[in-house]
Length: 302
Ligand code: CP
Image (cartoon, rainbow, N blue to C red; front, top):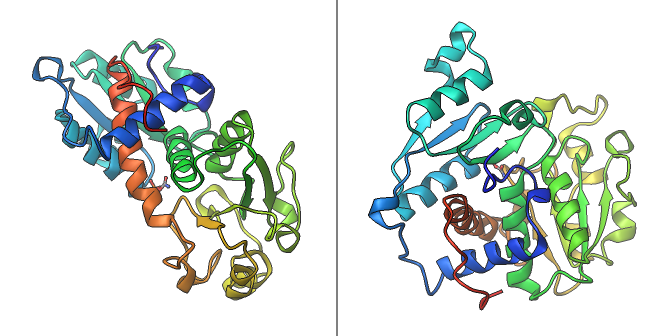
């Protein structure tokens, strides 16, 4: 595997994470027009084997802003339909000249099959395993809001069992000294994840990250309607009213309005959900730049 691949947050030291956040901030200010030098343009492919709006199209936006020539792979019109494997598909892209691959796949740790691939791979989400670019945009959103991660109280609520965002965020936030708690239905508790009742942790949290029910990964609660789920486990207006004055709401999205969060709260004063999406584009520019071997701009912004 290429040393500049980004598969899990474990691939990054804390210092490298700060460099990426710093570069992302620079892309929103001092380096907003920065592009890769022409001679180093690298043919890039986005291989999404699972639906995506934010991750796919923010990588695409980031690639185009950096000046990268880029293509989108469509599994439905590819030789996957003739039985070709993930490995042979990726090996084909490498063989025909692609220099950088962004991959999302429903299989946990799909990248373990790809260890012999020599071009950098950026993991855009693997099953319920990892979502490093989402984690980095979450860290940037928290940095922008609070100026630090150390000592922050972060509550992650909902379908924790099937969420790669919960997994990546827990790992990175704890490394930076944040306190992370989880809440949600008992059925979706995860070993090693400290769970508490949502209502007992609302006043504790500086940031509340709501999670969608990942029905595509088999998550279901037989006996609850959407309204009942919202009342029992979701962010209602009554719970919102109990949040700390400075506390914020986050959500990786897509949001199922009226299920895990009251629709009116999605764009409420405390919500940073659409800022997260903007930060995702900035962070992905930084990830692409790193993957192509460019040094960090320098630690001045974060
Ligand atoms: N947050 C996230 O990964 O969204 P998409 O599935 O739309 O990419």
